[in-house]
Amino acid sequence: MTDELRARLSEWLRQRPLLVALDFDGVLAPIVEQPEAARALPGTDKLLERLAAIGGVHVALVSGRALTSLRAVAQVAPDSRLVLVGSHGAEVGGTVVQLDDDARDALASVHAAFLALAADRPGVHVETKPAGVVLHTRRAPRDVAAQVTEAALGAADRPGCHVTQGKEVVEVSVIETGKGVALERLRAELGAVGVLYVGDDVTDENAFAVLGENDIGIKVGDGDTRAAWRVADPEHVQDLLRLLAHG
Ligand SMILES: [Mg+2]
Image (cartoon, rainbow, N blue to C red; front, top):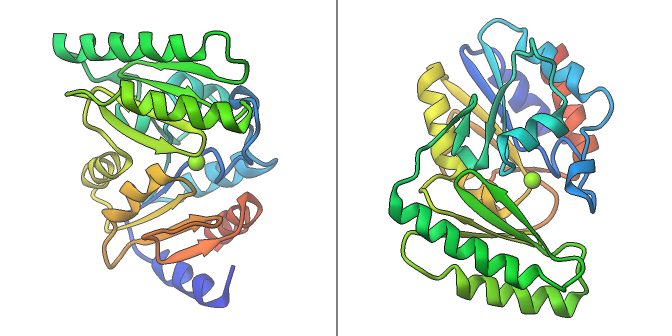
């Protein structure tokens, strides 16, 4: 963390109410091959809870994972103060947006196409979410990954499907959500005067896009971003949380 970022965070932290929102994978948890094996760095949970226990400071995990998956890997305690947002904002606190018939049909069709692409292709797998479906190619040979990604984008090119291409994933949602929409909703609910958002992937750019002058966007890792600040990896995110939680 640069001295400049440290100073900005310290100044920002004097206001109330504040929202600190973070993506999970690649931000709190190093990216691993098996998504279900992802865990936040040791000590991260305590820092998050400590930060959330500060009066007027709210902490949210905003993930593309389905809420059940996020809850499992983040291992938050039942009495946790953390707000969990899953499926890029389609799931908040256990409530899932209801699908209409068209959305249900679109989801079934893309789901079937993705399953066909994953069949007999080791390393390609399909994840089902309440309002979406995801094709994962991280564990596939590179030529296979490129081929099925193209086919998946083709299958998802239909009305009512919102496609996001992330790192080794093609994600299709049949409702219009995104981390930006989710973040704006949280900001309004909490009346936050400032938002800090930390993310590493393409889908996090939607969140960075809704940040204003009194907000702070921090991109983790390399790659183009709208975020004004950058740190290298989850270890550095932990440094940042330590500063926020302990002042
Ligand atoms: Mg991520």
